[in-house]
Length: 341
Ligand SMILES: [Zn+2]
Ligand SMILES: [Zn+2]
Ligand SMILES: [Zn+2]
Ligand SMILES: [Zn+2]
Image (cartoon, rainbow, N blue to C red; front, top):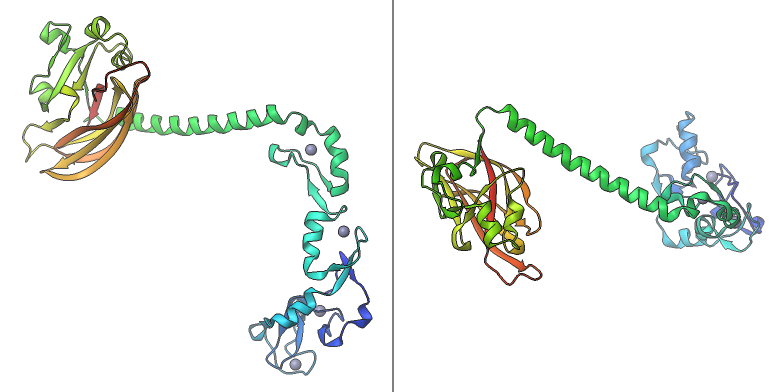
């Protein structure tokens, strides 16, 4: 196939064996027939597509499936080393095999995009005009602002994605009448105390092992600088926590009969940053689910689950990092509320 992007230097000196008899030019993507005639891939495919069904050289019956690309390195190398001249910029002495590189990386007439393409400059033109364009390119001038906006936009999209997921979870929570939201605020009225104590064993019809409660007033008086205070979100005045900073669990009352699902809960680390908690969901002592969550000192977080048919939920604090300025390393964490199904 003739090529408008380059022309051959000394075409008459090129051996006829390396030329295609259809286009009379040096072979491009040489393709061989079973009758051992070689053509440019495009030329012979075009020939067959036109309705011919025989080899143009010897009239041997031929179909598309008979064609095979030439893979002989020797021939391909000879073709790659043919010397061409770029029709666009006039540069001479380019090996044909390197011409594409010339066009895409070097040719001053080659078409390229603006260097501000990543921040949406629509300019494209000859490489030699890029410098001129850049002198007036508003996108490149505003690069720092635009980069900031593009990144900001990406962050917002991610946030929207996260929030959409949360809304969907919350919608499913609201729509399900069997959901059971457990808070610890009313312990204040039950116990008539504003301190800390062990959760009564059948609170809300469940069995609580090593689960304690702590009133906000107690935290304000005794642990004012702790992460505890960040657990009392949205007007909550009492939270649950793991006694002695060790493992705690919640079980159904009649293990063989009653099961529940874990939907979500809100939790905060009391003294450590990056407090890792392993959470395990079991049914008849068999582990069905497990997940590690990471709690923070500075803010509470809501975690979502879809753990169905369990009768025991265990929280095992594993490790954390000392919070700057806080010498305590106890692995206490607070649960503000927990939603079971
Ligand atoms: Zn050809
Ligand atoms: Zn033939
Ligand atoms: Zn060129
Ligand atoms: Zn530009």
